[in-house]
Image (cartoon, rainbow, N blue to C red; front, side, top):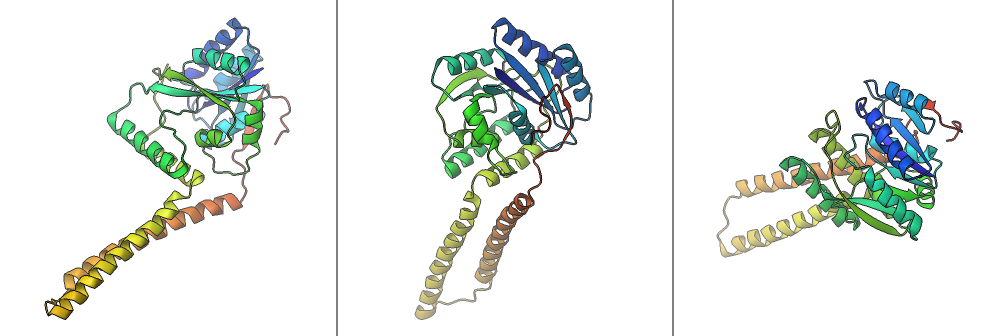
Length: 311
């Protein structure tokens, strides 16, 4: 059986479309399935639409959070309550083409493959600023962790073995796109073109994307902490060069009053110190969040989910 997991946040227009397109596609290809919508604390009628679809089709299931916990939490909630032999993650706005699910399923079923990852052959209609931000973000991730995620997406099929490995990870601050690659397993790739949204507008603003990027980098790599050390080394080298220059001028009698130099050095070193303290403080805050061991999400209500007592 295939579990199709669909995170949804303020997607009341897209829920019926997604349910119909995915269910028709899988039924036509004679694939046994369940469809799990995860309502991530939507403020519109998303949960009501999910309940309507669940009433019409008992294969459609729903999980409703008590508030907005974020897409990462919605993904892991879907993985936790999925009962399929494999799981597919797909966006509710249908920018991930559902037809690609069939290709993923056939590769998984007919080959010794554990993960079938969708890669973007084109990113669709995106503004230049968004594309530039994405390129910078994935470049940092690649240098920091060694994972090439340039064309990666959350759109992927994962075998039960890999799903169980992801569910066993205890951390609260998650980055699914990187974690699904970190667990290993044999992986194949399929390419797709990002489609236009069926309805509504993207919920990602530049501010939310920046916050997501910072949290993702900090949750998956400690590279920024190493950057603090690098800044310290560079500052030391500059200080040594200026010290040698000052001593030389003193010896040859060309020493001048160095008020400007002193001020510049103080500004540079104090800036680096403050930035370094900020980076260290940010990681300490993440440690603080982890050691509290609060749940990734809180479920308010289920629809058609068996074994609701699962944790």
